[in-house]
Length: 183
Image (cartoon, rainbow, N blue to C red; front, side, top):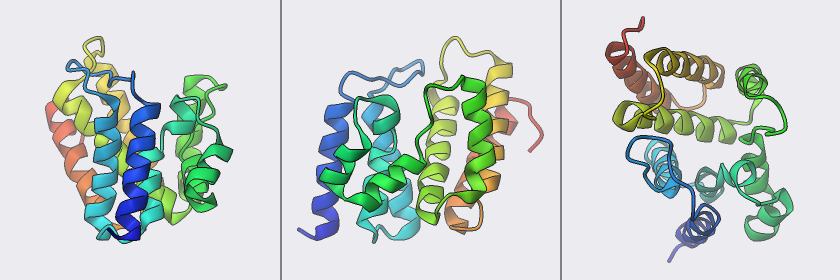
C-alpha cells in the first residue's frame, strides 16, 4: 500500500467516526460521510490524486467545523499541513451565518492553492446535493441564493485547477437551468 493510500484510508476512518451520526440535509438524508468522500474524489480526479495531504484535508475538511475535533488533534494524527488546510476551510461557528457566508466570499482569493481545491470541490458537492436531493424545507429562492453565493465563493477561488473549475461551472449551469437563474 502506498503512503498516499495509507494516509487517505486513515483519514477516511477518522472522518467516518467523527461524523458517524450526521446526515446530509437533503430529502434522502444520506450519511454525511458520502459528502466527504465525494469531495476527496473530486480533488483526486482533477489532481491525479498525487498529494496525500490535500486528499486527506478534503476528507477531513468539516471535522473542526462540524465535530468535536480540534486543530491540535489533526496535527497529531495527520501533520500540520493537513491541519492547516482543514483550518483554512473551517468557518467560525461563533459568527452569525450571514457573516460566515460573507467571509467565505471575502477570504476565498487569499486561501492557499490546496484550500482552494478543497473548497471548490466542496461547493461542487453541495450544489450536486441540492440538485439531486435538496432539503425539503428549502424554497426555490433559497436554492437560487445558495447557488449564487457558491458561485461568488468559487469565483474567488479560481486560478488553481481549470478542470475542477469547469466541473463547478457545469454543475452551476445545471442548477441555473433547473432553478430559473441566469447562467
